[in-house]
Length: 306
Image 1 (cartoon, rainbow, N blue to C red):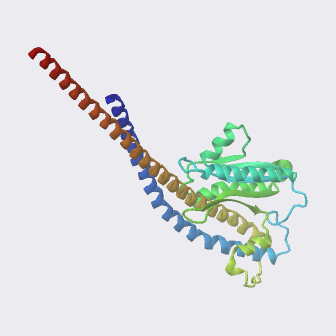
Image 2: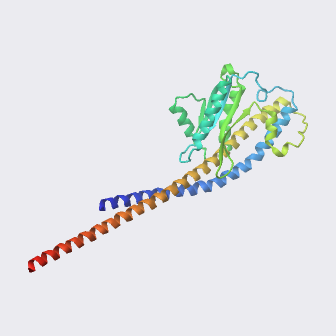
Image 3: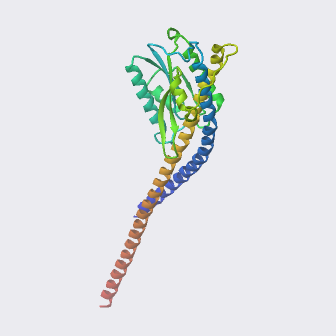
């Protein structure tokens, strides 16, 4: 029994050390969620107003710009998948990957060839393990993205849309990321960024739906204005998606670490009960041995007296 008690004590010590780590990670993730939420709140109005401006320019222009013109029979589509660089976040990355796989399957059923772009080591590792081709990948900034990171991701995507499909370009651009709904809810979503759907883009800003789009005079030309605005539109949308994903990642990690901490506490209680039972068994056995020894000694003494 003494050996069993030592085993339980070692397990309690190991689980307690793990609990300290998971509790620390839970607190770190909780503190980072607040910062990520502030960044999301700060970037969303800019992205919405920029979308409204692009919509107004595209609506008032007769120019057929490649970033706003629908292709009658699209043959190639680019999908940008946003996952995390680190694990210990529950099903955060796997849910986003699953949503990207579903989108890819749907696009292929519709006759499109799908080109994948990846953000985050989890997505890169998933595609590398399955030997799936990737057109571009970026890692190292998923938990704290900057606008420079978003621009770095958006530039090759815009270039792919501007290229002809015969030269490796794409007709459509989709993004799959995780949208932060609340501390307990993060939802994987897929959205089409390009070609810009004017009706949907206008509907994204609830406050702008009831406002009439202003009329513009374009200088030097409407095409030049679109050339300048639409890349900023893609960058802002990618940046907002990265921020939403970062907030979702921290929330998922906080929830996963809290669950791990709670499980560690339950294990410690269970091992403590087992250790107490083993200790009690040791004490009972020792008492039994003492009583038995005393009884045998008494019997031996009584026999010698006779």
